[in-house]
Length: 114
Length: 326
Image 1 (tube, rainbow over the protein chains, first blue to last red):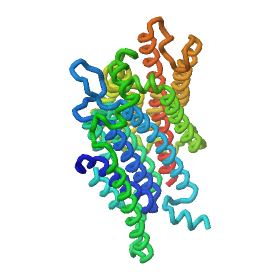
Image 2: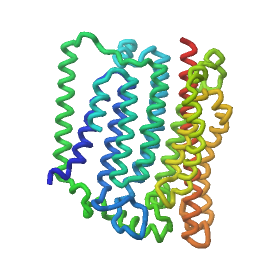
Image 3: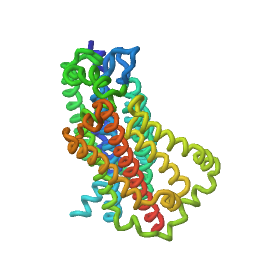
């Protein structure tokens, strides 16, 4: 039965890898890539929750009667687009940091501030 | 996917990391197809494997390609790293422990499949009258949420513009021809994409207006349309692209989409219903729903496409300016 939870575990592994990239490297761009991995793991989690075995994509048809849950799909599809928009905002901030400080390394930024 | 994610941890060449994250996006898109989430897969393929790496690469052009690594690892660093890995392992283990109580993957009687879901699946084909349940939940049942999300995207686009405001609309002559010349030799690329771009844009419209019957809708169409224009910008340079679509027009369009969405809500209020209740828009509630969904999906599509293109223009302008200075 534990095999059935395999999907969720993969999500957790991805999430931890994402968190590691957010915390460890001092490069801000790398951190954002990590944030993206973290985000995608949450997406996968939601979609996994919505999956129904033997179900099909939630588009009504006369030949199918079991569908996967459309609600997580809606939430995630909007979240992806919102995610890229906010990511763009973060990247814009990074570019401004670069032009103001001349670096995007976190530790060097700290040094300059003190 | 796990392998790709681990590879991203290892590489210090940020360009490679960005490429890997593109692969990661494509992998997750195919994963979503396997889990029946076709609409989501659409969006993820266009965003995760298309727009995200492109934006990243533009930023890399400004900030530099390599991550700085210390040649000699300091002992304190190793300890810190170990502590971090340990903390993550503990967190991960706790989360795994939490999943043990979760319903089995794909179980039809899981709590998540009860409640509103049953109504969405059983009623929406007759109540809203369109086969794609994702679209009817997105545009009708949860119209408020979607309105909020469109607003967030609009605000984010405006935020990016505000951050770059001083440079965006000033003409930079020094770097003007740089991007254009770089791409000039790649004739194969130019001609193949010249043939592809009309189809990409046409496909975006198809996705936009077919979203009620098949997978698709405003969100997907918006990003696909933006991807088409971005491809054009990359090949012909920012100046040419700005002649095709003026940034001023884009800014107006970006706001217009939100306006269309909001107005639909107000119109339905004036017609005697609730905010964003489309049933009152026509004599027959089902036809009203059709009309409402079509109009707000159009609003969503316009805002997303215009917002994404604006963001991209702002970034590539920034990249060109910085390259010109160096």
